[in-house]
Amino acid sequence: MTRSADAAKAGALLFAAAILQAAILDRIRIVHATPDLLLVMLVSIALLRGALFGAAGGFFAGLVLDTADLGMLGLTSLLFTIAGYWIGRYGETTGRDRGHAPFLSVAVVTVLMAVGQLVLHFMIGDHVSARLVLLDALAPGIVLNLLLTAPVYALCRRLFRPLLWGELAPEVRLLG
Amino acid sequence: MGVLVLLSLALITIYFRESQNGFLHRTQSGGATILRPFEVGANRVARPFEDVYGYFHGLAVARSENARLRSEVRRYRQLYAQSASAVQENVDLKQALRYYDTAKYPEGYRPVFTSVASRPPAQFDQAIVVAAGRNQGIRLHDPVVSSGSLVGEVTKVTSSMARVTLLTDAEIAVAAKDVTGAAGLIRHGQGSGDSLVLDHVTKDQIVHKGDMVVTSGILAGRLRSLYPKNIPIGLVTSVGQSEVELYKLIQVTPFVDFSTLDSVAVLVSKKPAPQLP
Image (cartoon, each protein chain N blue to C red):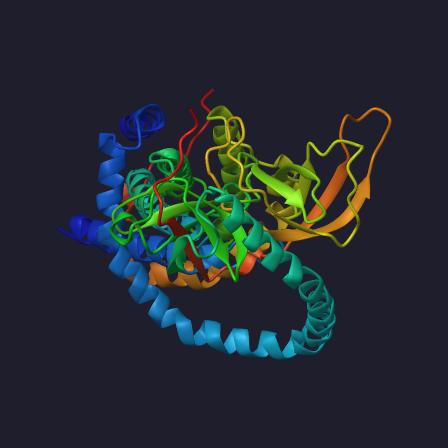
């Protein structure tokens, strides 16, 4: 019951974030970069609710964004699914209860998303300027996303209960 | 996760390979129509904030913009005086010759004014999505203008929305000419800015800094859209040539600020679109 309520809340949050991203935030350009509310929201939910929520939420959020933007279906979903799953695993293991985890996750995922999108666009034959993506827009993009992290993560913490010990994946330990 | 990744890859593959009328494209079109009211709602909520920002931004740049516009008005007044008699002469001669032409801009086109519904991140996609589509008469490859200057062309149409690829996209090329007659192709310039280049202008043609570049109205080679003749594109900001290059190196600054587009007009031809033989 709680799990399905969490899923509904996560779905509603990601849907709202995708609409805001497509309708408003994608139009804002500050020093070549665009604040990515949807990515920050996905990272926050994945950190709090784990890998399964992260992957499913990422797929759903990417699909909504690609539909609203009339972009290539599946492209954003693919990257968001991987990002959501990976950050979810981090949240379940080493990242739990660490204050810097949301900020570190958002910064790292912003970089990986930029590289991932660049590679995918090259693979499907789109002309994308690597200089614009990696030199001009990346650093301001990280800063903008980090500015969004604190309020978005605080909102998600209020909406989602902390994971119980049984729901957390065990820490990775080296044996021997 | 593996299932979702495979599903994403399958979506990309099918979407990439299927035609504009394929199942996924039609599903996306339906989805976009469903999402549209939510986007309109979000825009309405954000509008007052955008207006406040626009007001203060306008105040900040008003003085310099005023000076620039005054000098432009002086320049265009001179140009108008020079060209008015030539235009009349041209009209008279065409009538006398019963000259057959393609649809003229702006008389031969019906503008569909529409707002910009969304724009994908500019570093990956030089495109915007507008809030009008097939239901408003928009067709694939229709030209799009803003404040009378060229913005790009329609590259995807759904019943209620259309995707417009901007001139700054590397895949777009427009047959264009300098007002003095030098003809070439407008393409996106090297680098990350919004600058354009007038390519394929042979070295014997004369182009000056400050010349206006307009569409030439020719459907050349593999170009997809017949942009009507004489839509302003931008001003020549530098002209150069080198021994090794076959053509002149001409940089053009577009009239349109692609980063602040709020509304555009899609030009729907009143005549059927011409096809290459």
